[in-house]
Image (cartoon, rainbow, N blue to C red):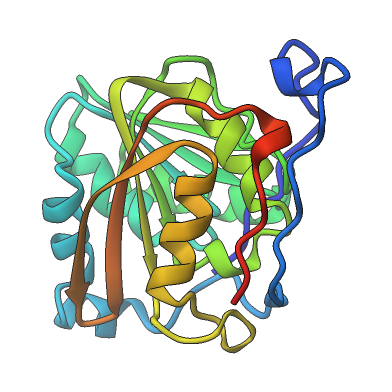
Length: 222
């Protein structure tokens, strides 16, 4: 699935005010090879989206961000769950991908979807706007995961969380070992809430904890 690459950095963030930058990952970053992960009908047959929605605790009225939305598979399945009182942010680095998702959403008739383009370092989502941030089969393609996660904290509402879905295999093989994922996400101050296996890999849910001093953050090694 398309990785997140989000637009210019927000100068108001404390990290950018001359502070020590967060490290880059000490592991291979997979190349983006497709805007979609597998066949959508096959994913539906094994209940992938239903499992992720249940494990991530997505409910009516919530605001959900699909970071690196690619073809919009999750946007189209989350939009009816959160309903008109909720909101879905379709987020991607690619303007073309967002245009294609917009066309799919328009055809489906959903009116609760917003579109955000960003960069590899910043999801560029509004402050305190998201209950659940999904990162589906794309974490291994993020060039600056520590920086992205640190900035994403600002976009989460109180009680907000992130849910990462990936395959338990090396990042260069378009997966992410469970232990390495947990190490990287915890390194920037998130806490693991739950991890569960599903037909298409695993789901790991995290919530923000205490943000560490950026100078103290060390890159995890594979």
